[in-house]
Length: 270
Image 1 (tube, rainbow, N blue to C red):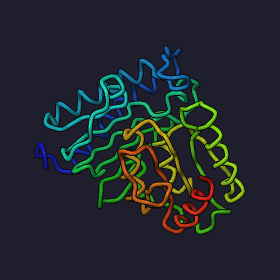
Image 2: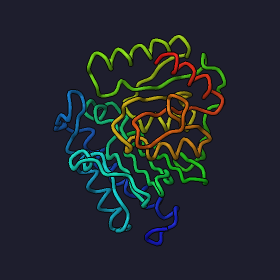
Image 3: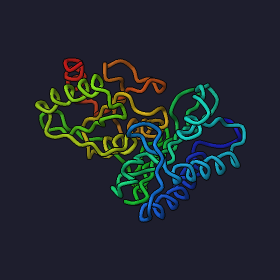
Image 4: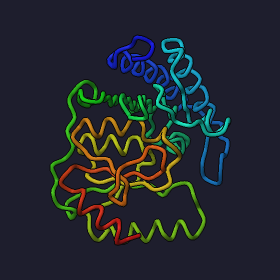
């Protein structure tokens, strides 16, 4: 293992970083926000940048040989290729739009891949003080209590989450709303929380039964959540039913009972 750390050490450091970044988010959440636009609806704040700097400084101190991919740095410096090296993949503030509006679904997401495989995940919502953690092969936890996905077997009784995404062109929006229309007749209800990482954690703790998103920002949205879902007994896959690929912005998640029916409906709505 690089830098003589165990997976438990990596997790402990990531939790420390997430909690410190969470403090910055909590303070900023109740103050006036200074907002920049990355795109038409994609926002970035001073808090995003401050959190990313804090997290990377702390992780680099502990693990100087590890690689780093962050939403703000990568966006600014071109995309960093994911290699087999231990790589920290960080979204310093997932749910920036929520943050700007004072809607309490915001989180820090810190994932570690080893050999391109998501191995350690931490997602922390500092406003609701919920800390989701997972280590490959060692289970997933919410504030230290073990997590399990739902046991729902019927789509019609399932709660579905998705996101509208950041594209606002008519073609993308039509495809997205058509898909939602087709799914709405098959499930109980729909949620759009505004945070991909927290949607994945919702699957892991059984608050949500189904989640998919097409065209999210990048691997930083899912790197941590994927570990947490799998360790809670959930499945992560491409919405087509194929294997999940962390480098492609498409994800679906559910408990094992619902996967086949969910994929079938997703494919019909393509």
